[in-house]
Amino acid sequence: MSRSIDYGNLMHRAMRGLIQEVLGRIAKEGLPGAHHFFITFDTMHPDVEIADWLSDRYPGEMTVVIQEWFDNLDVTDEGFAITLNFGNNPEPLYIPYDAIKTFVDPSVEFGLRFETQEEEDDDDTGDAVPEDAAEAPMDEMVEPDEADAAPKEAEVVSLDQFRKT
Image (cartoon, rainbow, N blue to C red; front, side, top):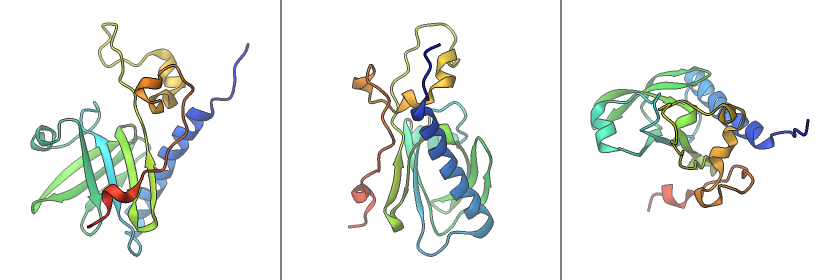
C-alpha cells in the first residue's frame, strides 16, 4: 500500500485545535491584556446557528469581534457558542470550527486563514461529504484555481485589513 503521512490534514486539525484551546482559555479566564479576535466564518455552513436577520444581512460570510463585551462563551470539540452585541441587541451564535475562514488577534499580529475550494455537487447526496473528504479536509485549503495542486499549508493573514485608520 502506497500511503503517505497527510501533513495537510494534520496541520488543518492542529490549527482548529489551537483556536479551540485559545477560546477555551478565554471562556475560563477572560481576555488578557489587549487581546481581541476577529473571526470570519461562512454563514451558509450547515451547522452555523445565527439569527435569520444576520444570515440575511451576511449571506456568505460574516466577521465577528470578540473584544470588550461577550457572554455565554461555551467551547466544545466541534465549535463554540457565544452571545455578542449587535446594535445593543445581544444575539446568540454558534460557530463550528469548520466554518471559520479567518482567525485574527491583531494585538499580537497573529492570524490564520483557512482557504476553501468550491465543492462540486455532482450527486444527489445533498450535504453528504464524500468518503475521501473525511480523510483529507486539508483539500479545502487549496486555492480554487489550483485544485489539482498539492494542499497548501496555512497562511498568515495580513492584518492591514483589520487596522484602524
